[in-house]
Amino acid sequence: MPTPSLFDQSPDAAAWPVSKLTQTAKRLIESQLGPVWVQGEVVGLKRYRSGHWYFGLRDAEAQVRCVMWRDDASQMKEVPSEGAKVFAFGSPTVWAERGEFRLTVRRLIATEGVGLQQALLEQTRTALQADGLFDPARKRPLPIWATGVALVTSLDGAVLHDVVSVARKRWPMARIMVIGTRVQGAGAEAEVVGALRLVNRVEGIEVCIVGRGGGAREDLAVFNSESVCRALAEVRVPTVSAVGHETDMSLTDLVADVRAATPSAAAELVFADQADVLRHAGALASRLAGGLSRRTRLAAERLNRAGDRLENGLERVINIRRQALDRLGVALDALSPLKVLQRGYGLALSPDGKVLRRRADFPEGTPFRLRLADGEVLARVENR
Amino acid sequence: MTGAGESPPPGERLAEDLRRLEEIVRLLESDEPELDEALALFEEGVTRLRQARDQLAQAELTVQRVLEQADGTIRLEDLDE
Image 1: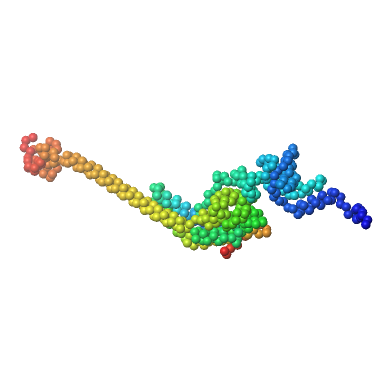
Image 2: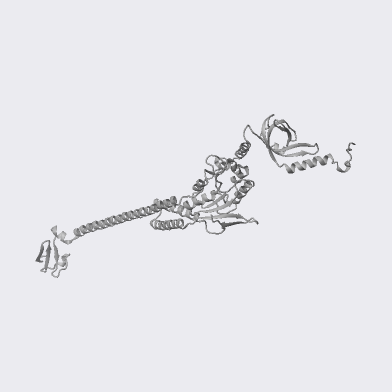
């Protein structure tokens, strides 16, 4: 049996150039294997002057060549040591020129024996903390009587129902503006970010609640994501995070101005209680009445005092006048001719009552009247 | 944007009424105003108080859904929950 020639299949037509092979492999791998997380140990890491990192990742059975370009490598806080256990996030590819399979790594996280979720969470937490997003100084107080309230949550979830029923009972003045969004699963992260940005564009919003009902720990991933946390920090009104877990904290709980254990608790923090407001108004009403009666009493007292002063003043004026009058009476009395007569003087009067003052008023033989203090005497001029 | 050019939201009016009421009470409790001024303040206080109570009594919760339309404008739609 003749051995078939290697060239029977018209190799000229069928054979691929090497470059076509490696390019095709590259294209297939890149399109079929998206970005993935890989867990392994770092080996032979070399940092080039260009800033790129080259290293291997291995486990007990295999190894893969990796490259981390300058832009991503420069984000790393520290260089992993030889044998460090890491999670690497990257895109598998083929270096076509060399025909080498390798991983282009974008992020590298030391595992230190923790799970990937936990490691990611820690990394996000560190980044947010470094930017001051947990800083107590940036926490804003909630408005006392907020009416315009944005609610970012799922339209189907229990959160909407819980928040609305608390608001109806406590604060019927409220206007709740719901921005519906998925809160878990693919695409949820981007939707929540979009919803939070929308909050900044709606007028009349005074406070924003973002939340979901309770769920498994994995379900809270959206509320631990960096993009959601950063969007939350940029909401222009005070925010409340209500992520439905009494025990677990989410990163949004740390970024929001206020954390509520449950959506109902969030609503109780946000909506004033009308009973409290009515009590407050009642207290103000009695103070208002008290204030006025106090003020009128003061006025009445002032009026009385003024009346008293007026009366006293009048009395004094009258007394002064009376005393002056008395003095005048005394003076007048002193001047009275009768007083003179009492001192022993006499007054000569003609028979018709004219006062006789001079010697010439007394011709010889003329009768005249002499007025004395106790009466008159008839007299006649005898010898001049 | 929505709600532009309308009167302030009810909560703001209520807050303003109560804030002014507190101010009036403080003034009346001081000796500052003359009697005629005090009477005018009292009258205003009573009006504000009645207004605040009426607002609470007549309030009805609104629940709306915020929708962003294709052209980027925002629409509010009443939500029956």
